[in-house]
Image (cartoon, protein in one colour):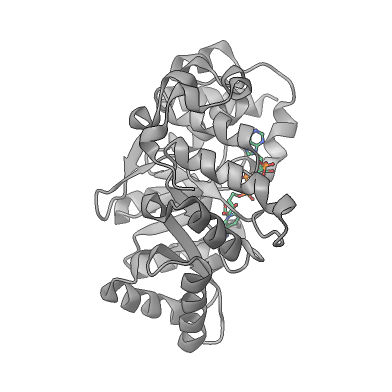
Length: 306
Ligand SMILES: NC(=O)c1ccc[n+]([C@@H]2O[C@H](COP(=O)([O-])OP(=O)(O)OC[C@H]3O[C@@H](n4cnc5c(N)ncnc54)[C@H](OP(=O)(O)O)[C@@H]3O)[C@@H](O)[C@H]2O)c1
């Protein structure tokens, strides 16, 4: 089924979803969403992407149908950036199948990773497999996963970039124990992107890595923005503060996303989402505006008081 973004209308969303969405989200289509530029190129990306470490399901229709729905809605709402990895079980093949069934490859920005530690040949073989599994001739962003094998992998990735098989390169982590080495690699190599964990609960990346990314002209993809979902347990069923509505928040997910992407060095976040209503909720964060420095400090103070 081929879907065009031009098909996006209020009527395109089900009544139940409309009820669940706030007014900002309902009124605003992809055209109005907040985008940020990739520093190395100026290309604009929507600030909400899709994390797929839970897309590694089997071939059954029962397992894939909800993911197809989430992906279709993600695309319809204007999402483009999808982050996957060979390390996420079958995630790359599931995405390759679903994207081709939906006929949406041309609208997407696909990011995957390499994690082989057996040298350049291993990385090369793995990148070729990723292209085949994702059913694509080109990867938008190729990243070294958790710095695994980075010394050998980065030159191979750079070569693919020169050949036009990869558009951008980067490195990822989600552990502060890797930050010191991560920082060194950022200083030594010209990367288009870093991907790092950053959330209202885990702010350590803001101490050195995010300012360094800004200095070095690197885009920043934020992972684990909900702490894997744990942060929702901490905020519980409290209402969001009234002042958060000033910058367009209608849910805790939007509060958390706007906080993280509101960091001046951040380019986008890739919340993991397998459920349709989570996609709808999270895209609300791309509407309105992002909090300013003072509002972000207020968000931190509130969270720290919980
Ligand atoms: N080192 C690395 O390179 C690295 C490490 C970790 C993660 N990542 C990338 O970052 C992505 C995100 O990380 P993550 O998925 O571990 O953590 P996360 O984004 O912090 O949390 C995902 C969890 O939050 C839930 N959720 C999403 N939207 C929600 C909403 N609006 N309300 C309530 N719950 C919501 C999801 O539920 P549902 O799934 O049920 O919708 C899922 O259980 C990964 O998928 C992966 O692509 C990269």
